[in-house]
Structure formats: C-alpha cells, structure tokens
Image 1: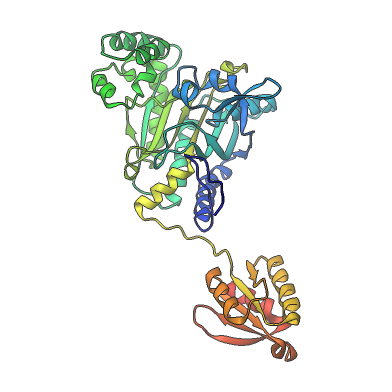
Image 2: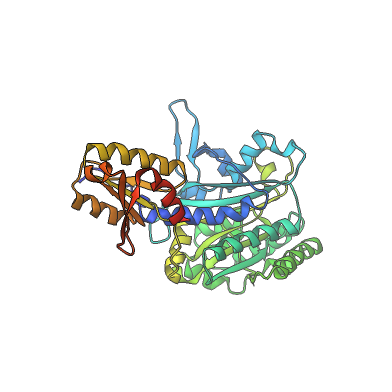
Amino acid sequence: MSTFKAPKGTYDLIPPDSATYLAVREAIAAPLRNSGYGYIETPGFENVELFARGVGESTDIVTKEMYAFETKGGDRLALRPEGTASVLRAALEANLHKAGNLPVKLWYSGSYYRYERPQKGRYRHFSQVGAEAIGAEDPALDAELIILADQAYRSLGLRNFRILLNSLGDKECRPVYRTALQEFLRGLELDEDTLRRADINPLRVLDDKRPEVQKQLTDAPLLRDYLCDACKAYHEEVRELITAAGVAFEDDPKLVRGLDYYTRTTFEFVHDGLGSQSAVGGGGRYDGLSEMIGGPALPSVGWALGVDRTVLALEAEGVELELPATTSVFAVPLGEEARRVLFAKVTELRKNGIAADFSYGGKGLKGAMKNANRSGARFTIVAGERDLAEGVVQLKDMESGEQTAVGVNEIVAELEARLG
C-alpha cells in the first residue's frame, strides 16, 4: 500500500466511476456547444485580489475558504475557488469584448478549491462545468442559460430537481433595500462577526445557513418589495421566457447566492435527495463585475453546475447512464506469431474507430479469457498457430457464446458489420 493518500476533503476519479463523471461533463457541455458557446480554460490559480474584489471581501469564500499563498517571487496567489472571475479576467485580457460580437459566450470545465469542512457533497477540491455570456443586458440571455441548464439535467435523466429564481435588483434600487435590511438586522441578537458582515454586505446575512440566524430572519424585509420598475420589468420578462419554454421554476424571494457580484437575476438548482448540500448548481447576472476587476462596463450572466453533486443526484434518483463500452473487441493471441498478427489487427480496428484491447503479458488462454470478460468486450478474437496456418482467427460473441472462424483479412470488415 502507498505511503501517501489523497488530501482530506479530496477524491480520486478512477475507472469505472470516472466514466460517469465524463458523461456528466459531456451532457452539461453539449447544449452550450450547440448554442454558440466556445470553450475557455484558465489557470488553476490567480492573483488573490481578483477574487477579493470580484467574489467579495466579506464572503466566506474569501475570508475563510480560499487557498491563498505567496510565491518565491513575492506574488500573492490563490487557487481558484470559482470560475466566473477567472473567465471574465481572461476575456478582458484577450480583448474578446472588442471583437464586435457581443455577448461573448464561453463555457469551461475544471477543478476548484475551497477549504471547507468535508462532508458528502462538499469537497475541498470539486469539479464544475460553467457558462458565461459577457457583454449584453438582455432577459433572453438570462432565460437562455437557465433553459440550457435544465436541458442538460433532463438529458441525463434527472427529474427531481427544482429551479429557484429571484431578483437582487440593481444599483438604483438595491441601496434602498440595503438600508432597510441593515436596520432590521441591527435589531436582532447576532454575534459580532455577523453584525460586521451586516455592515459590509447585509445580503450575505440572508445566506447564513445557521438555524439560530435563519429563525430570526423570518420577518426580514424582502428585496422584491423594493425593486425599481426597470428591475421588475426585467425579472418578469425572464420569468415569462422561461415559462414559455416549458421550464418550471419556483420564486424564492430569499435566494441570495453566496457571491457579492450578483445583480438582478439569480437562480439555483436544488435536488432534495442530497440532504443539506442540496444545491447542484446556480448562477445569475453580474453586471458590475467587470468594473470591479478593472474592466469596462460589461453586463454579463452565467452559471456553474457541480459535476460531483450532479453525480450524487443521479445516484439519489437511481439513474444509471448508458455509457459506451470502453472495449468492444478483445484480442487473445496464443503464440508469438499470433501476437504479431493480432496486435496489427487491433491497431487496424482502432484506426477504424472500434474500441479494441489486447491481452498483454503473455498470459495463457484461461487467464486471457478472464481479462476479456472483465473488459466488457462484446467480441473476442482468439488465434493460435493452427488458426493462422489455416488463414483464420476465431471470433467469439461474448453474449451468446457463439464462436465462428473468420478469415484473417476479413476480420476487420466482419467486426465493423457486426458492431454497426
């Protein structure tokens, strides 16, 4: 056994489970690629200030959960705790917003890092697929992203998830609500850290998960009662577009989300089969984030969906994905000449798009057939000296057990025909 283990709160993706994660990532990405979103990949670490400014100085992510460190050169860096700030930074740095085709539509997939108390569904290293539409203020764009996430989940076979929807207002109406909320919070019995948070960003207190805090927030003023006419009209159009697309959602006036950059539309995907870690994804509009990190005004909207939690949601519903076979054909050579001939045939099969594997290590027939069974291959090719002398190989159907002799030069065409 190895001396080393994966760090606490992390996990290794290994076969066969890793195939499910890959399928989930592909299913989430497919609707995005079909809707004009291009792939982007950013570094696993960024300048600390990028997240402090964008995510928010008062957020738990920045104050408690971010993996920050100083390099030998004196740079202050952090492992990325979320994707939006990094993607927007990259888009600004590459001047994608100046190409003349707004919104800039991007999707990404990767690992993110937060120092949290590990539990099922909450890891210190986790995987997300995200999408960002940068540079346009349009309710149809908000609706598009919600619809695409719904489409992705349903393509996987998920049914028992809910979409929560709210509006956080904008720079015109939110300050009025902020003042009203602060006055309400000052009248509660809250600890010093929470009161300090209420002074910096009172909306963050609404996102506090502690029961003793939530109990006191029952009569808190609701942002929807303070929305200006423009935000009300914007939010109503988002609701109408989603409804017209046949996507069900629930209005949640207390939905805040955990990051400071959200404005107007905010949404969350929750699955009731996951216990306390019920959120499987979420996002919203962040019209001021570009200015926060030194860019021009670029109204934007996006989301991130957790691959880990989506897999847990599939397990909770008992959904088993139809995964392609990792191996369709397994070759078993008996003797040196057969090794040379069948290895060449395996190479030819792979070139023709057929998943094929080979019995390595000079195993005997019994051991090699055990490997063939474990591989899940539909067909096995077996050949020995006598077969090759007759110009054939033995093709065995692993489902029916039927075995037939096929010409060495015809085996590739025969397998292409049988596998369709």
